[in-house]
Image 1 (cartoon, rainbow over the protein chains, first blue to last red):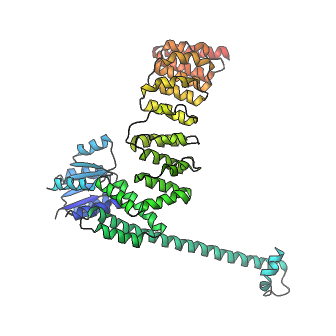
Image 2 (cartoon, each protein chain N blue to C red):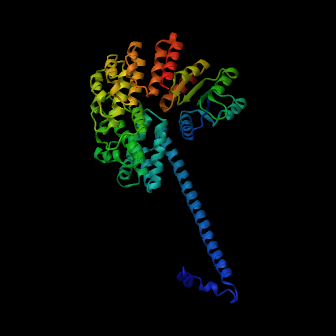
Image 3 (cartoon, rainbow over the protein chains, first blue to last red):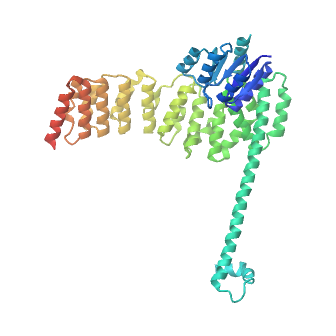
Length: 118
Length: 361
């Protein structure tokens, strides 16, 4: 079973993502902030990271930089409320594989995850 | 006080020895009263706290139940929608508090989710008859309930008889008026500003910003022709319409704007000048120069700004003699703009200003 690390601080979004991705057949691990995510990344391996950008303690960008430097094989999808072009461009320049803006379509997210993990 | 003393505290005074001075007796009685009052007060606070904790616990339980059922409803294909949703409604949506939490939770989901799932949430809102609850709240509740109900109905795009919304456009509470305006904008198909014809109170600056934001982000129909409101009885509406004409580049309305340079309201005249500037209507400069002397101080400043934006140094020079000796703020502005037009003569313009100042003083 493929493992997905979800880094998100909104409880409602966490629960929905967990429910949807578990239904799709993935093993979903939750990190409520960037610091917890870094800890989890050091302890285990993941097939995909789904992360917000505005996170407590360690920001999404810092986390992306860490992953791309130390664990470049893990694809990253950003799930963020930011719609500003420069923020999206920055994320892609850092090497993220996909960027989804909130409010998001769960079905679309599911397809994008599937595409990256296939 | 004497009556209270004889009625309530005689039994208490019986406990005191006969030779105890009255002051001491009174002190003891007052202490006793204060103590009883303090006990009741603390007890009341504790009771309130217990009630609040109980209510919060109920809210959290209800919220968790809702999260589960909403996730199952949206994402679980094996979920028996018909049966489970009806069961939930019968068991958990009976009290107003439960219904309010359900509305809040659905709105929270709705704000984070789009696409087919958002449509499903709207269907659920209707299936649980939460719209009926909101409609009732519009009719007979406190202002914050009305405001919340309007917000919920507009978020879920639920149509209500506009006759029920119109009175709320003139509600005494700002929040209700604002939500009523938002309702009109979000549910409009072709005339999002229809509500401007029904308002009796002036638009506040905050409301204007809110309307503009809603028009850009919430309304998806054709942009209205703002010239329709240039002759409104509300000067704030005229002011808003003028600004929007410039914001949305409605060049075709320039001819409608020009007569407003002679409007009786100073603010409307200023806004007209600013909008004509923003629309880069250079021809207005001659009119502004000819009107300059009759204008108020604030409008004169706006005219100077317009000349800086659209005019030339020669246009500015035409105003030199029209500025009175005592209009120092205008003189400073005038020389500031002159320096803008002739940056190479900055120093000599400043010297000229100093000379003029010395002569007048």
